[in-house]
Length: 370
Image (cartoon, rainbow, N blue to C red):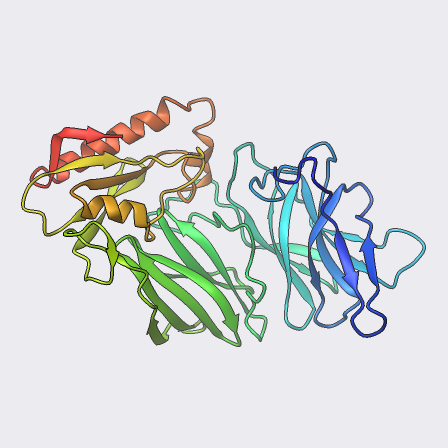
């Protein structure tokens, strides 16, 4: 959206070894824009990119991902025509990352979806066979309470998402309301979740077989950096992050005082909501209900200074995720189009009623605001 009438995104090559010449690459045949370049570790003249089609629309380059696109691989030394090879047959594809030995490319792909955002598959393209296979497929009807709902809210793979041996990929996703790091076995597609409900775990980088993961929650503003052995799942070290500031009940301002806030995750129908409240409150608190926008987005269990401020200032805060929110499965996401304004509103009302019923001594049912 920000690119409309501004410029046409393109890939440029800068020669650092010789004369510093800059060369603009023409996008592959049939493409209007190109970006997300990644050189092969095995051959600096082999380049993977993402090519977007449709010159009249620039959706998908920044905010929306449901714009036709493809991952391509090309030989920069090839002359006499378009040398690019399309990777896979997805209608939507992005974020190519080479395996450390240059023998394969991991990327995110989807046959397409009609919503603002949707689940994507983790796919791997083999450079020798030129074949693509699913590692983590799109789960159409997964129950997030018992199984992984797929990969959500992942605009880009980490640039170093592979372990050095090429056996494992670390991917950031959503599992219900919780931002989650997934450790994926490339050979069989099995995965392990780092983190759990009511918290946030986001991978920052991978080195050798170690992933650095930042963890926080709605009641912990600074969190910690975890060093995780991806082969075993063991936390090797934990380093507390510098405090970002905690909202205190007394001053309603940010300082480094200890928080008395609590977060409760409430199952509501097929999805969930989470409630942020002050455990030390002696009287019932008015309830502020904060639905997310999108509509295909998610209220995640990560720290939010504005919500913590409200909770420490005398309010309880409810963040509902309705059917149509990201992170709960493709079936629920796709159930919302055509029902916006009814299904989502009904689910927000149901979540509000569930919270009032569960915490009758904490929440004031006569003082509820949205």
